[in-house]
Length: 181
Length: 210
Image 1 (cartoon, rainbow over the protein chains, first blue to last red):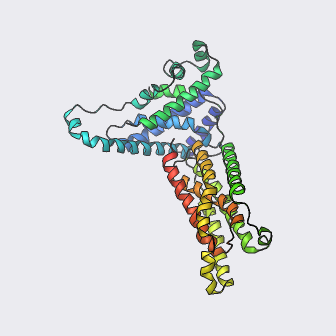
Image 2 (cartoon, one colour):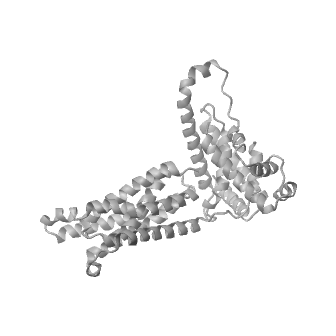
Image 3 (cartoon, chains in turn brown, purple):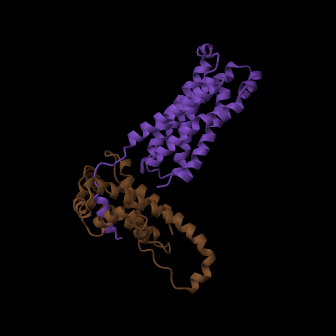
């Protein structure tokens, strides 16, 4: 990562930690692009894996572990270490799947091609949320409401929406780590 | 869910993170010291002749070397909880270097006939059992702190947590242990701390997931 890029991303992340949502979105989009490029080149040859899964798991981890970044430290090595960790994790889970699949090898050869993992871990992970968390997460992510809008639509306090959002994202990240197929 | 949608959800959570690593470490280390201290005073207590022992260099050296080990492992442990942060590994050589110097001085001070009896000591099995006993709760506290962070090398981080917990446990154990020779400390304290390091590595392998 170029020093200018790093400085800009660090600036965005600092703003984000002070509550600047647009800055956080810009930061996450740039990080997503960087991780996507790396994941595509590393995971390209791994069948049944979608680089976008790595992108999403990395973004979730960055959010849930943002307190491990120190504001005076460069942001590039931090992002790369998290992305690498998530990629290794994906390889490990994939390895597990492959050993399971060996017994079904003939069957999967005869059957149709295995479905592509289109960020489906995340889709399934949504299913493990409580109703309240799912309502909040989908109001904000799928329907594009702000926290304030989601709060008034769902008849909740803004703070309760923030808490449900945080818990929902944490639950999604946990579920991805567990399912891993 | 598309990545765009995920980014919308995450960015709505902008703001001060709910966790602060300095506070996590302060809580974990305080808890670790209190836990080791509580077990020490409940189960062991200081040796009866501690008044005289305090006047000998060998006895005091045990506290210096174990405290140095504990204190040098803490910053390495904290770095291992932060992705992309390189730990300052060389500081962890401080305690082993002190031990080496002490071994040389001890070998010079003793006649060669005393070497083996000083190394074997009177209490080796206690040492191997009691340092892990004193260190197990501190190790759990440190693994919990690592878990609140983001260790990208969980096995290594767990092992360092074991060394750190072992150093802390050994500070307390040193006040109970009747064997003061650096030859004894270098052998049995190291083995006991290594046990905790192995336990920590195992814990790191299976507990530290994020």
